[in-house]
Amino acid sequence: MYHQGNDMDENYKWLEKAIRDFVEHSPENSLKNENEEKAWAETIVGFAGGDDPVFSFLKEDIGEFLWTPHEIFSLTFPQHGVAPQGLTVISWILPQTEQTKSDNRGAEKLPAERWLRSRKFGEEFNVKLAVHVVDILHKEGYQAVAPSLLSPDWKWQTSQRYGFSSNWSERHVAYAAGLGTFGLCDGLITKVGKAMRCGSVVAGIKVTPSARPYENHLSYCSFHAHGTCGECIPRCPAGAISKYGHDKDKCMNFIFSTLTSYVKTTYGFESYGCGLCQTGVPCESEIPPANP
Image (cartoon, rainbow, N blue to C red; front, side, top):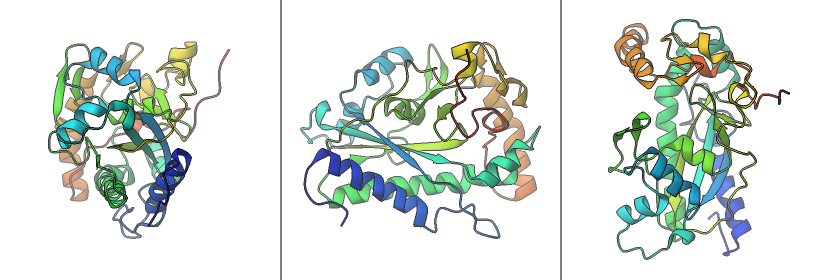
């Protein structure tokens, strides 16, 4: 049993501990390679209120198809009767290990095997982490859903403004929960860097929201904030990153026309993670120092 009492700060502590402990100790946190190396390093966790105005803004900006926390909660639990202010979005960051980052840093045209394994087997663990979080919340009497990782209603969408999208964005949720801001390549720059995956759960529990310690959604990117860097541009083997941002079509074409067949032929499993733009750059493992 993780929780006793109803204090919001106590809720924060037991939830964060449950997530961190599972990442640290579960044998499922594995690259499934010969040495059963961990897929993910120590996680960080953030919280956003279900009534945070940022979710309404994102829906208006990205597309009507994008769920607010209240919408996906209501879709999952039609009889719940919980107002938006009674919901919390729990978001986590799963950082790549140092060895995985090192391998991918040395790659130039195609991603390293460890990175591909993290995208395949590490993401499978991410789903199991979501199941774990939902289960422990249910045991404590709280309804919960993992929108993109577990909901059968999640699907890919097309944003009129941004193109390839979906009805729940883990990176945007992490931004709302104070965990990071976006870079030139669309990756999320967090205090443990951009080389990571993320996940989230919407729950009918009230937890004090995390602060967003940044001015806007691009604050941590040196290119956007100061006009410097741009080191992710030459890192992209698909030529999908430029000073104008990230070309999703070029990126996806490379992944599905070149990368998937390479991985299957070379390593014998299916994966489509690339991540070259997330490694070998100043924001790989940290927020870049501010530039004048």
